[in-house]
Picture 1 (cartoon, each protein chain N blue to C red):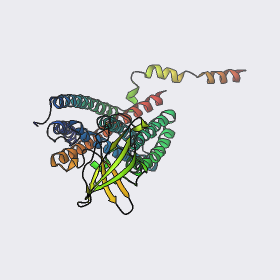
Picture 2: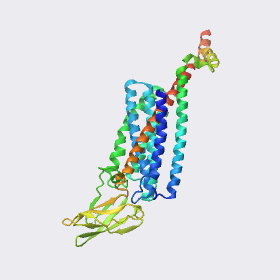
Picture 3: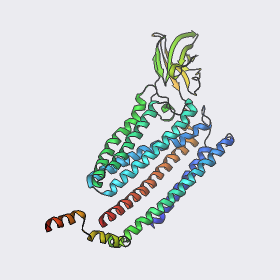
Picture 4: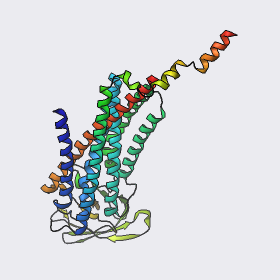
Length: 321
Length: 76
């Protein structure tokens, strides 16, 4: 009976994910500014979420192993870390594709890309450490301790570090409500960094209630520059014209103007802002999160079973020799 | 649906095919893993020695090089 339910659940994962793929391409609407390429968010964010979940599960079972010393806990910890690594790679690859579409380059060493790369290195070191230690008990013990320490870095690298950076192109503001992308405050003649673009506020011009900022935007590497002129309505208290940065789909917005101090707040607006406000997109997005989570649970169970079987076989062979 | 271009349908077919491939692969690995575990659980440890036991028993009984060396030292 249990086996039958288990088989049904696995079949459900297959059908569920097929449904998510169908909805991703054929049900949800195109994203403003991104077109069809923006659909990748339905895969990108859930894989990133599941990788965090997997690393948390790995840390949990590592702790359980150190407490109870059951090999099955170690098997689950390793299996979860492997799944986490795999899903992190998927998130990185889908993110790089998104990056190519939006920023015009696959890899930009953006704070988000750098932090995920460091995370991959930390967990690659975990597997290298385990492979380098022969005595099984010692391998499990040190691996569990390392896994616990590795997980401490996960919230920092995934959630905190990219938000600490003032200059990230990653569209946190677009997809994660509550994320703060405050932009930068400049006065005339001052230089700042927005994303990986150096910007300089050249002048402010007022015509009635409309403020126009002349902003020099330099490409990464300072190879070329352009003058953009975002505008702000004093009467309505909001930005009006938001010109595109050269060669990318982000827009430059004049969000605040303080005429008394001469300071203005400039920010980068990502395409796709408010993407998951659309109900079809929102439900597909949540279904994808659920589908990837179920897939992770299945893979975790399967991989830990395989690890358990291989250890058992090794033990029996060892006992014979 | 109407706003989707032909490229979206191609991407959909490719992604779905990749997922079906992954799913079938996972399904087979899962079945094999469960079967292996079932066999291991069912088979008592003593019966595991069926094939290699003859060779291995001989190896166990044969004195190691260290043992032979110790024996020679004792014999003077």
